[in-house]
Image (cartoon, rainbow over the protein chains, first blue to last red):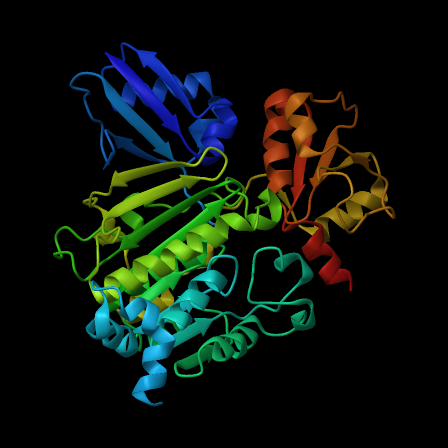
Length: 77
Length: 371
């Protein structure tokens, strides 16, 4: 299964890109583990996860290809 | 004011058939509070004043500075040093003398928030820190007020309508459903540290005003329970649906007394293990045998020539970690945020072979103490 990731804010700065794809990821827990391996800085950051443009609050199994967005909080005003 | 003059002032929006006289009356009867007369608040309140919101409240305790003027478009060089809330009210009165403006020239806290917010229908959060954002969110939930949220970071903005009274209570989403816990202090940089182009809060603040006008008049679809993000570099908009989180209710103070005793500052400030107070730092400077590193970018004021140090901006430190012989390293920056990040980087590199500290609250707090 293909996951298309979209990163925002500092997460995109860390990854050096706003979008990339990962293959064979069954669920959001596995996805998080994978990206924290790729970018250890992200493991200590808080961010919200949206699967197919809807926020999720617990591990979510992908039923087919999915779009996942990772959104960090912004404080500036 | 005569009806003719009123009609002339609002003629171009009344002629929108979706708005009309009825919509204009709704705007006149509305009570909107803008918290933060900054990059987001300035454009938002200019358009809301222009549109004829009958009662506008402005909360800000800060003073106008030169570094604000590139984005806080209500102010001019003549206003430097003056109260933002008072000056904003004066300028808005010139835009529209027919509305009432209430100035709250004070810092929003859990002891005054419920009192201030309770007189308004819609609250706009244009603040610049997490403790205010959680405080405002919780107050809106307690008081059943709709919250128009805007926030920015570097080239990106976020916009949402939380806790909308137009949404049924079980579907109602608030800020804690999106971000349940405040990030550690050093995780997210504010505008002063991360930088911001003035246009971005102009865009997001203007959109906050637009959402507010839609909510009041019932026109179109407000961003209720949805989040919109905007990237000013590539013009990408991204919209997503926000869903309630089962635990959110437990995290919000239950009543007035619980709210007033909740420490939002402590909730948003996770102390770093690298923190070094200036009281402990000063004797260390005298004793020597330490390497002091200023991680601010070159040219940032104030300089610290009076102490022996080297400059390695955080951006350079991320690229290449220098070999440092001293067993004790003290990192410093303006507020203690970047130096904490730097301490984590060095700590990963050196492990336990060095003692690594970050000057708590930075050079700003240290200097303030010495003056």
